[in-house]
Amino acid sequence: MNIISEKLINFRVYDANQEILALADVELPTLEALSETVSGAGIAGELESPTLGHYGSMKLKLKWRVIHGDLTSLATPVAHPLELRGSIQRYNAALGVYDTEAVKIVARAIPKSVNLGTFTPAKPTDSESEFEVSYLKVFVGGIPRVEIDKLNFICIINGFDYLAMVRVDLGGL
Image (cartoon, rainbow, N blue to C red; front, top):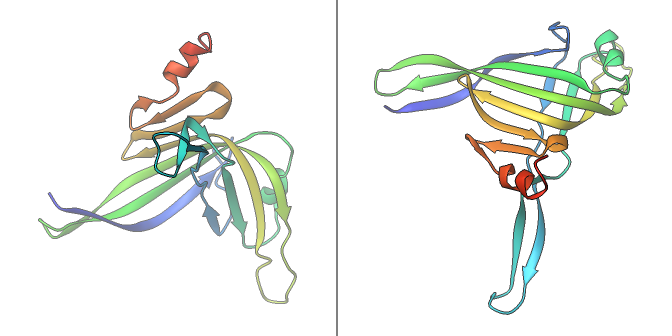
């Protein structure tokens, strides 16, 4: 089967009350492993060694068309549960037909900054909210693919928990 995932058809963002948030775009977090340079005898040079299950700051950015209540509500200094639900367009090259696949991202996000944007007549304000993400879970086609919970030592990628043995080593966190 030759399935080509082509593009995100559309998406919605939901808050803790499962209300749809009014916004323009979302910038998703980058998963960048914390690493340390390893060098010494037996190594030809240096090697950036990632630390299992540990990631740098994961930022989520919501871009708003204008200033409104959703932007100010999410500015409160608490962890906000956010859920992004999208639909990916796929093309089946063998059959010559299109179908869709659901993608869902669940995040626990703490506000870091709010950029109120600009005031220009007859233009959007292009306001932005930036969050620090402590919990992230990604589903593709209903299957959990990534779960990172920094505060509970969980790092599951494609079904394997890379921090399970670390939790045991640390006394069963």
